[in-house]
Image 1 (tube, rainbow, N blue to C red):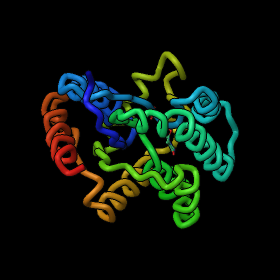
Image 2 (cartoon, rainbow, N blue to C red):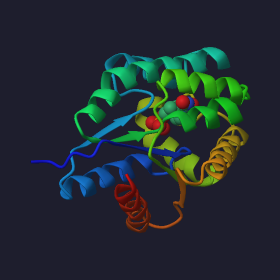
Image 3 (cartoon, rainbow, N blue to C red):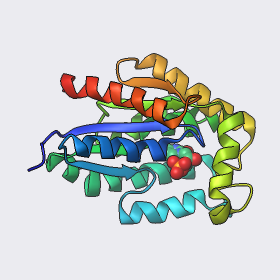
Image 4 (cartoon, rainbow, N blue to C red):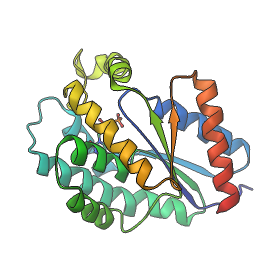
Length: 216
Ligand code: TMP
């Protein structure tokens, strides 16, 4: 019998920060502790949202900043109702690879859309759901971007997906956005530098998650 612990944890980070492998390692850790765990991602998670993800990441999609923002939010609204809410109701710990902080960092700080508007849309599309804990994996884009493009080479070619193709300055602004969010919400967002090996990074993540498990 699995332990019930409806808890919403999100992972954030720039390109090539190692979110995806750390999400998987955390899932394994929590499952070994006896929890029911559900791992999902944004944009995506639900069938329609995965279709929207393809449009968003396709280097051939010509999107204006506002239509890009609305597509991320549309995918989110579907994901929340179809996947996240039911998983939390079933008593699972939900780990989500990216969530609303990504929209503030990418569409707000990097694309330059008003962050007040983004805050309102984030709230509407997530139906007010806030993560109990957000792990922000901090990597300098000068390091992470190259790693991400290498990983994505087969799917999108050497320049990466539509977002990875953006300039170094764009990705520096993304990082600025995340760090500003972390400063604003220090209780929720924990910054973990990924200049260590995966094992050490995962150890720091587990420490934060264990603290959160005792709190909620
Ligand atoms: P990834 O998380 O698999 O790297 O790909 C998702 C991409 O979408 C990544 O470049 C970040 C970007 N993104 C946004 O620009 N805004 C958002 O709200 C979300 C969730 C992701």
